[in-house]
Length: 564
Ligand code: GLC
Image (cartoon, rainbow, N blue to C red; front, side):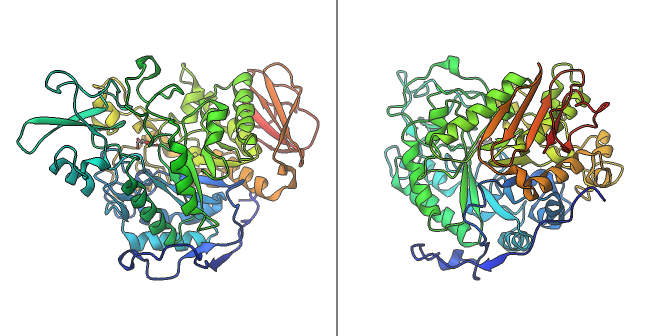
């Protein structure tokens, strides 16, 4: 296709020198070869475009209907073509899949559903050959209830060291029949489940902020960090370039586990006053994690931090804590000038206070896809798509790291799935009142005219792909200069290649009502957005890229433009 500049990438793979201070890995866990890591920079993450792969939904190489690592390996060329700097793999470790991998029963192995360690090693090497870094999800807040530690805890008495790795408490009430406090689970129902003791009688309760199959670890117990350190080094020694830390504002719990104000909670809702999260003790944990990562100078970690307050957010990315904080402000912003501007200003203000780097995203595997979100209550997907394209140019015009959720680059909407195929634990735990997150996790459409569009060789994929996605396949979009995929490819290429993207600051331009315009402070790239339902005149400059064709030389409704 003519509109995309040839790949910017050059091969830059070098042997990583083991750090002096890193612990030797256990021989049974060693990859048995020198790990490869890209070595051109220790701050590759400052402006990286990171592509989130939800492995179940990306590409299925073995025909079982579920995506896997072999599928990622086969489609690496696509990611290179797209122009991303790194991938983030949602969890691929051994898991009973109660929460699709976010319930880990062995953090130092690959689940057979996704492949094995050999395939993982091959993926890391092949990605590095293409100049793409590999980061993995790590789940330190909880384990699976099928983790050997939890099995041992259940089999051991109250007060035992085995139970001390989790948060077991006696119940309230005359016979301990009431949960130890009033905390609800994020997924619905109580955050506590009662176990049967060795004598068969109901006994203690254990805490699970998420599903009952995800018992919370006791981060006051030094064994818990020691095991996480083993896990971090296990994957770093295999050559991974960093981690996405799940529930990075979790882990630490308030002393005494007091009752919480239930007005602050809702299913899958986040609130800064929620006692279950963002407790001060979490920062000591991040400092310990960072100390491990510092042994691997080009590795970086990004934490999932659902915290709104700027100061509280910034605390997580102080120089000795996380490298990056996953920032949901743009994903939560309405398509209005005020919301978009407030999201950008707050994000920049928060990180500036600690000298950190901003991050941006429009969606991930936990939230509604942006095309549907921006379609509004009327569900107008064509408006939603136009706005999603405009917002892609907004986020890619900003300084910092950008996270693209797989399928966003194809302009995929959420899917209204029938009840009988829903798999998110939220559906069951909410008593079928909350449909959960499956609608944003439908398998990607690659090629062909009928579902599953090359995702798998079986039509029985883990979630069904709608027939209407025929026009959204990679194949259909690749040669179409106006497709969302082409827009992303051009935007990523320009973002990498053009000097106008220089500078860490943003200056605001005056703009007509309903419009927003900002400029990169050093390179002077201008990004202008029109949220009106009518065209508006462009700011001065030469158009570099526009999310929709200009209308008589003016910026179309629900569109954005880059100018130099
Ligand atoms: C994070 C993940 C989400 C998961 C939860 C529990 O929020 O992003 O998918 O369900 O943690 O691990």
